[in-house]
Length: 164
Image (cartoon, rainbow, N blue to C red; front, side, top):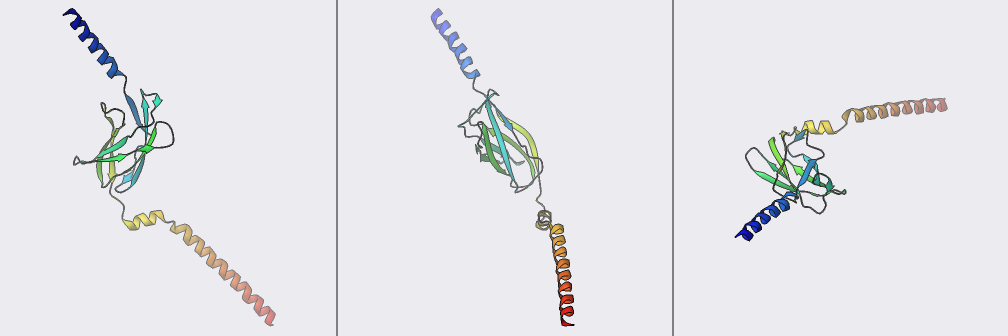
């Protein structure tokens, strides 16, 4: 009886120490600041064992949950540096989204982050206007037209001088 009690106590002690050492910390290097629905967020995820050692060979993913409780999972891939992974996250609609990281190492502690507010996409005309540099292009065209007029004027004067 006494041997069984000692064996149980030792088993409990060993179980506690075995479970204590396997954790990872997760950081997001570039959290989203201003996103519109449909934009891609190149999330960079850093995973460190015990908060110190970069962890390679994992298959982490970033999980996004919308206000209705629907979740989408975006798998991450190695990003060229030990412990660094990248997931291309697309928010399908405007609204508030919670997100967390499944580190691919342990799922005992969820790695949650502050929610992000995704904006409505801008109308296509406004997006095109914001993306295309109309003012500089118009300036270059006007300068080119002025230069062409000056050159044409000089050529006409030269032709008149030769004809006279």
